[in-house]
Length: 372
Ligand code: SF4
Ligand code: SF4
Image 1 (cartoon, rainbow, N blue to C red):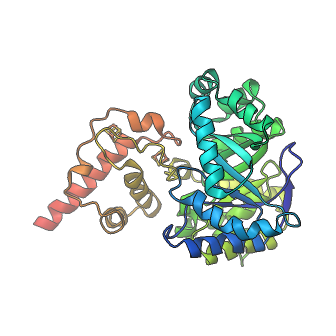
Image 2 (spheres, rainbow, N blue to C red; image 1 turned 45 degrees about the horizontal axis):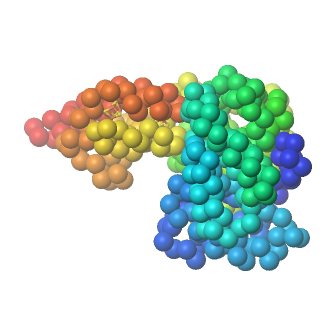
């Protein structure tokens, strides 16, 4: 395992972190705890969770029971988050997180899901960061961090307004061109950088052929290439992988173990090879999931990714029906009022309403063809 300094915190963190948002079956507590423990034994020492990831905090708590016995000799760090804004709600939330994980303190506590500077300022005005500081003084948290999908300029502004010690942001071989400025701003402020979605929400492994440009040797997989591309970036301390199973864990470990510095010209080639379309894929972050018409926007946009990557409408229609259980003649594809709520929340700034319209058209064409 490769270990990196985490900004100015003095902590040494593993180049791969364990993201606790993609467990295969959260009801199988034993298997989830075994996966977390296996990652720890393989050298991963950064574990990221959140109160909004289903039972994730409890599952980490179960694994930490055993891991704590070794913690002195083999340190590990825990990151969790809150979207709360008022001091009393933040305190209640962290107390719940600490109870669920049976911990005395959270190493990296995040102001979670900051989508705009206005949103951050509102939380500052409500006393959120003052409460974070009180929690730090009381020893309940160790470092104050931010989790955001803001763009580079806004991230720079965030650091002008508060000296965050760590930042969690979405970045991958799929969207790096779009997010690069944010990363530079964070590194400039000597802030520890954790990137989420390093595998594009699972898209890179699934369409590995389309991502073969990230491979720098003939025997590496696209996943290994994508992770090594990030490991090679000195601005990034941790790439957070949402593990579902042991095979994914093994592959990520292989990526780190086999890492060799990538020549500058190869990195330049990877960057050039980026297709514009890859910047406009949905990463599955779920921030748009508040449609007043109850349209499951993230599911639909995930299905649309399959159309963009395969250029085959059938791949998208199959995904809708067989993966998401959405019938092609259902209202779901037809009730968008174009209110714009989802587009305002979209972290990738995707033209969601246009895509919905395209999906409707493709579904209708398919239905008409199959009627005649
Ligand atoms: S634009 Fe359409 S899909 Fe988006 S939130 Fe409004 S109704 Fe829902
Ligand atoms: S459409 Fe945008 S906000 Fe919604 S899940 Fe995809 S990337 Fe995230």
